[in-house]
Image (cartoon, rainbow, N blue to C red; front, top):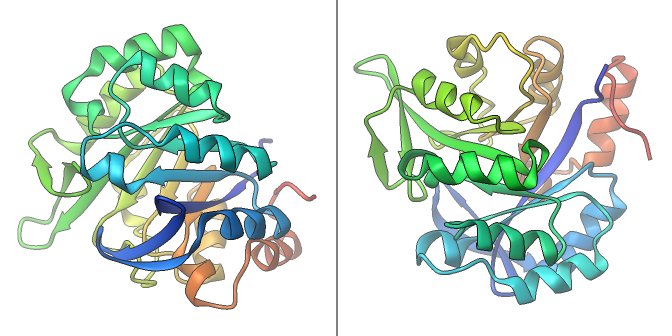
Length: 254
């Protein structure tokens, strides 16, 4: 059985990290080097690093910062933001990342996903989708460009397209819950009815230990991606893992 993973998400701009709510109102949290060191010490399994500038300003991922982070980081590292070509992916991997997170190009450049999995291997490619729930229509909708543009593709169809292109992992994030500490939207997992073995990373709104337990035990997700719970509460990856072990959830122990 594959072990479940605890993955902190780090949003950075320059050498500072930020956190907002519902993909808006980012506020300064810490310097990047300090927070990477903290997660290394507190038994995170992996890190996901998202370059806010490259995501919002259509620029390239900051390779200089990636190189410096890679020098101090000892955890598997995934990077996202500003990835529009195989060359972008190659540079990010060469500068210390183990995987890349591709979001907006999931909808506008599926050839990139095809080529990326062929050239670098499925294990390097995380297909990421961001979504909102429409309570009036009782339906889910996908968004790109940091939650700014609605996509007309049905979420199930969008995910099928990614799976057909052999992505290594699928990351799903609730924009409605992002940064709000109001709980994971596990109903979306139920709605998707994914029956194959693609690893699912879920994030957006992680509130407390119960979110981790339910995601792993009841919905069999592979990893929980979160940040606010570590920034604004007393929880750390280490404290979450201690409880998971007590409840007999299979996780990696340092």
